[in-house]
Image (cartoon, rainbow, N blue to C red; front, top):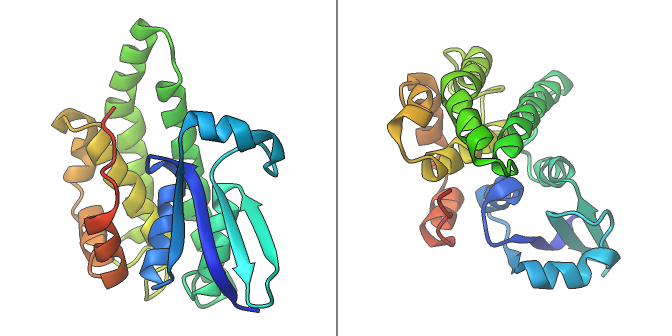
Length: 214
């Protein structure tokens, strides 16, 4: 049964919820973008499915409500509902490969963002710029090759999620040295340009709250 209403619940930042927001926007699906303060989240944390954000509440046409956690599950649900998951099992699996690689990328980023020691944090930032980001840029270039899209012949959540991550990085690390490998990648920049031709995504980006710099 088709979903009737969507509610995406996260903090007031792009983070792990942004790819789902973009996927819903790409599909032309209206959703309630709920942005919590830390205090608001603490009050509802104990009653949430896993005590983590983001979450997505889906109200179906029959009135049933289901709350999903885990960003990967959320975006895959949206993808399956809205033809953004590839046309074959092979394509869907390749979408999963890209999404899994993005999870690995996020793991590296989280190490940096949660590091309390300023000396170590500075060292990790250098490593991100010189090693981590270039490595993952190469991974995604190898998947895309000379195709228009990451997977198959039309846009999938793989394209949306790759775009979302590098879009966030370009804002968080606005010095050229950190993201120069991405900015020098004709393949991934071309992908971003194609993603931005989607009217729903274009509208969302024009009207969404501004991402915060780090």
